Each structure stands twice: as structure tokens, then as C-alpha cells.
Image (cartoon, rainbow, N blue to C red; front, side, top):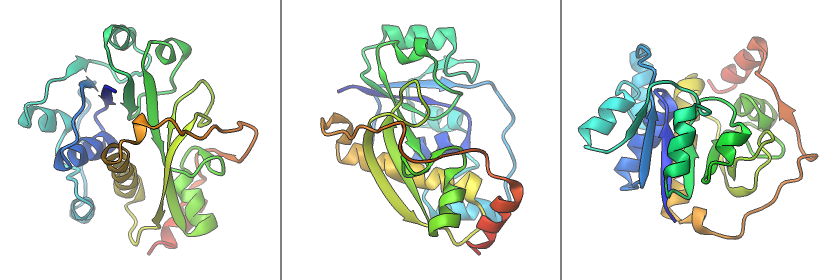
Length: 227
């Protein structure tokens, strides 16, 4: 099976790429959607927290690619449904691409020939939707990641793997902890060849719960519970 990854210029892609390199995980095809957005600034505590998890949030994705002499195809817009990306996917021999962001996949990209795999920060079907790690912290004092094949519906694809994590003991959940738990799960699926398994678990879209972007007050309560 040939695997690829579609990167975006954000913390999640930084963690995925850096963790893959440090664990000697390689991709047969790398696509980088880069709109040349300015790099955000981070506090020293945030930087140190990320480093304790094994990645550096201050290093741009482009730098990591170039410094490690990795070949990649550049798309100058962050849009998972971009027509150029669809063309590249259709002409590639890649079986599976790791999705890191860039919007909701539409039918054309879903039917371009390769499967897309998402590392969702919630244990489905109980936690579908947005900012699920905050809801699971509030409800269960822990978080989880589900790896699944993407389909036209929201977080309902066949489940490849699920992993639970204890809630963090810090406040850097969006930029650091989210990227950490997803990237650690990414390492698991490649080290254990889980994408090549044929024992995937089908979901019933009618089961479970779907959440929406968490209210700032609830988010604050979730963060306070971690401190």
C-alpha cells in the first residue's frame, strides 16, 4: 500500500511531519497546501510544552520539508477541494492520504481515487463534530482520537483505530495537546501497519452524538479542570 499526506501550514501538520520523521515514518507522496500565511507567535511556556511532547511549534512546515530534503508538491492555497489537488490525486498511484485540514471533503476529491484518513480528536460515535476533546474532558476527564476513512458524512467513516489519552495538566490544549494526541496516534497506525488491515469497524451514522464549536464559557471550564 502506498501512503501520502496532504499538509497544511499549521501546528497539526508540524506535529505530524516532525513525529513521522523522528520515528522514521516515510510517505510515498507529500502534498503541501501553503498560502504563505504569517507564522503565529507563541509563548515560551507553549513552546516548551510542545517540545516536551516531541515537536517544535516554532518550525514552519516548509522548513521541515526543505531541511530534511523531502520532495513535495506545492499547492498555493489551503483548500482540500482545490482543482489542482484533485488532479494530483487522480494522477497519483497513492492508495491512502492522511488528511490534516483544509475544509470538508466534497464528492470530487472523495472520488479522486485515493482514500483519505482523518485523525479525529474524539472517540466516535460518542464524540463526532467539532472541539470534541473539550467535551470529552468535561464529560469523562480524558480525551481520545479516532482514525477513520473519510466519507461524505461527518465523522461516520469506517474506524481504523482508537486511542485514549489522559487529559492534559496545562492550558495549551488547542495548539499543543490536540496536535500531540493526533500525532502520537499517527505514529501508532504506521508503526503497526493498521492502514493495511482489513478488519475495520463500520459505523452506524444514527448512533452517538455530534457536537458543535464549544461555547467559550464551557471551554474555560474544561481548561480550568486541567490546571
